[in-house]
Structure formats: structure tokens, C-alpha cells
Image (cartoon, rainbow, N blue to C red; front, side, top):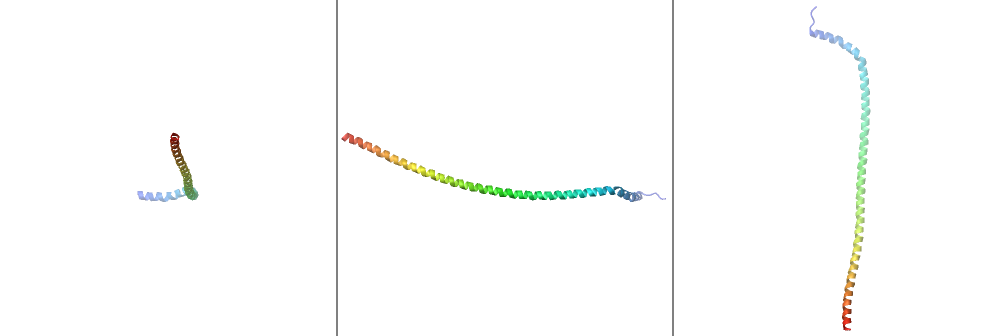
Length: 128
């Protein structure tokens, strides 16, 4: 019988050990396959939940944008209303100030007339 070379030994070893390993690991491979199927199903579920969360976040973003627009519109409306009220108030104050100025002019005129009258009365009193 000739001496087998390393390659011949490897062929024999691979040929006999492969079925033994497959037989020994077949139940383990089935368990691993079942676990992978379970993990795959959980991943699918997580992907669906993540998709739902993304849609929810998009909806929340849309609502936040709508709320921001409403706040901006209300702020503009409030600012315009406040500006209008201040304009009315300014006009009223200006009208009252004009009335006070007119009254002050009348008082100045009356004071001038009194001073002139007092001067005339003094002159009449001297000549009289």
C-alpha cells in the first residue's frame, strides 16, 4: 500500500468529516434559522413602527408649521390693531393739545387786553 500524501489525507478527512459535522450541527442550524426568522420578523415590526413614527413626526412638523403661521398672523393682526389704536390715541392727544394751545392764546390775548386797559385806566385816572 503506497503512502498517502497530504492531499490524499485531506480529501479523506474532508470527505468523512463533512457529513459528520452536518449531522451534528443540523439541529443547531435549524435553531439558528428559527432565531433568524424571529429576528427578521422583529426587524420588520420595528421598521413598521419606525415608519409610523416618521409619519407621526411629519404630521407633528406640519401642525407646528401651521401653528407658527397662525401665531405670526395673529401677531401681525395684533400689531396692526395696536398701531391703529395708538394712532387714534395720538390723534386725540394732538387734538387736546391744540385745544390747550388755543386756550393759551386766548388767555394771552385777554392778558394783553387787561394790561392795555390797566394802562388806559391809569392815564384816565391821572387826567381825570
